[in-house]
Length: 307
Image (cartoon, rainbow, N blue to C red; front, top):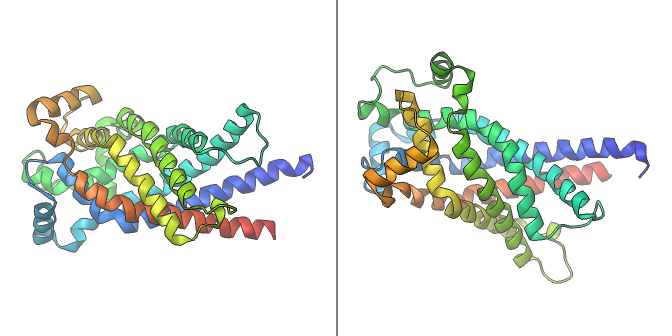
């Protein structure tokens, strides 16, 4: 390829990574949103629900099926922005790792190098997801905040009402409450996320073939395995992040370590893992759908570009 075409190819590749990540984010939300709602409720109010079944039953009895999709709009915004930025940054970080390692631009990275690329990319994704995830978590736990008396019954519970409330109370930086927790979750989490995914793809790739030749089932299983690795590694951090983002709605401002210490000392280790069951149930279908949508859309766009 001539030198004048290299910047154009890099721009097109970046657009493909961005678009494929966004498509994967949509697939992830619609597949896993009900499980995510249960997770946030149990993380924030572990004493209100004894187990997953009770949380699902009470939620359905009080508010019906729609309650499980509370916060879907900000969740879509969160996952589209996060995954678009994540996979765009992931492609860039892979190219950076190749350059730093002195590798050819088309050389395939090892699974460990790809895991490291995912960890670096998560820094950019954290900046994109923190504001939208703040709104999502608050909407998902709004009913429990009102029931527990931490919030007035008439408090508005729409996306834009939550955003206006944050801006009025804390200003634009208020949308980044929980950013340090998000970074602490994302950087190690995405190391295991992409590392687990690539290990899965390596395991399913027959001798003499490449990972790009894998079909839908191996891609979904590999994606689900990567998601499970992520949550096992960082679940306590995510629990603290949810507490900070939800309880700050009632004016309870606390940092990561003080929040973690309060949960551990007052509620015990069990509270830190409250909601893990629906999270692990969600991990396989949601992340399997994410990577399947990402890989298939990326392949289609790459094939179109090469024709």
